[in-house]
Amino acid sequence: MKSYQRFGLTTIASALMASTVLAADSTVTLQPVGAFGETLTSCALESFRQASAKAGRHVEYKDRFHGLKGTVPVGEYEAFLRCREGPLHTSVTATYSGEFAVVALRERQMLGETHLTIDLVAAGEGGAWWVRLVGVYTHAVYASQFKGAERQAVIGEPEPGTYIATVLSPTGRECVREIDLLENTRHWTFDAATCSYGLDRFAHLVPLGSPYDHQTSDWYRAMKAERESLLQELHSAAEKK
Image (cartoon, rainbow, N blue to C red; front, side, top):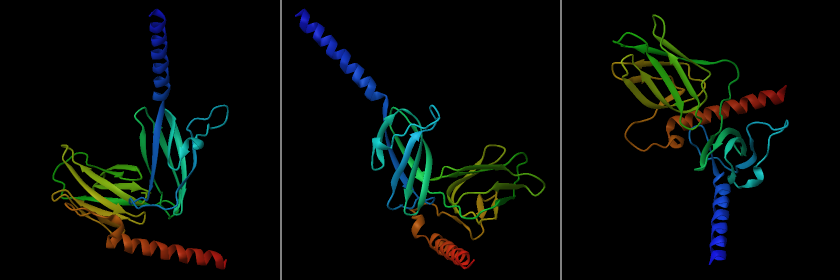
């Protein structure tokens, strides 16, 4: 009986140790998408490595993955993928509960400094007004205060994509809308009285109250065709040099 009890305690202790080891691992799933939530094709993991280098090198965990899902020790990582549409990169925090990481394709094609200005109109309240853009898929974040006599905010070098745009009044009143934009966008207005935007043609206000497919919208299709035409022209010009 005593021998059985000792064996039982040893077995329980071993099981607890094993469960502790298993608990130190995290299941990571990578989901590549476009900046507007598009489905990407022919995607493969090129590297999944620790964010911090040890002895001058990053420990690689790519062999722990089957496709875009793998099990790695809890910690901080960098993921590098390649799809037919282009390369992707993101930082990943692997936790005990697992991690589902959206990896967005950076679609910025214009080089050089660009900026978006937003004019605030019909703002009855004084004090500091702010605008904040948060990328739904890219996770890019931009924030700016409306300043000067013209009450203007400036967003520097915005990445293309779908954003949640929030304007915050000095008293805490918020106006939240979903907006698609390209890096070409240059000037918007925001009417505080009606919580409405005036956008140039390189940005698009997502309709409220109904399911919306960004990829099938007339705006997205027109902008995609225009961008592809521009790239072809640039490529042809480069070949002639």
